Image 1 (cartoon, rainbow, N blue to C red):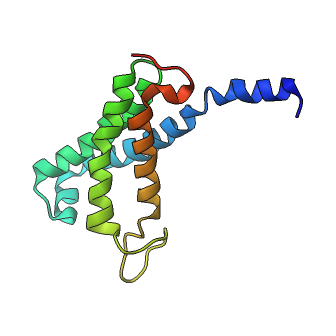
Image 2: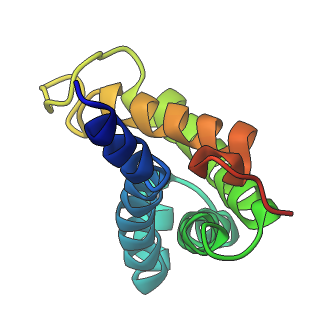
Length: 140
């Protein structure tokens, strides 16, 4: 490959972290706002108190916004946002999706398997560990 093409790819590569940020924003902002819109229903479905449902919904939506805004603003926002969502994902994996390693819903797992949730958890772990250094430069 020519040196100019490699340089162009490297230049674009500095912005690749946005694919992870937009993925996290789109998934968790949607799910968090959906839960906030029906806290009682989510609490009943999860067999949890409404206060816990509120914390889950807030962690999802607030964490997603922090991960996204962290790309523009501060490293701590990226890390805090990712860390806020990680317990929610662990809860979803172990309480709902555990034991089935694919996306599809089945008779035993009507909410689907855990492959997607584990992938999201690993993206969050990456963002929590790398912060804003994912774009090639770290900011405080």
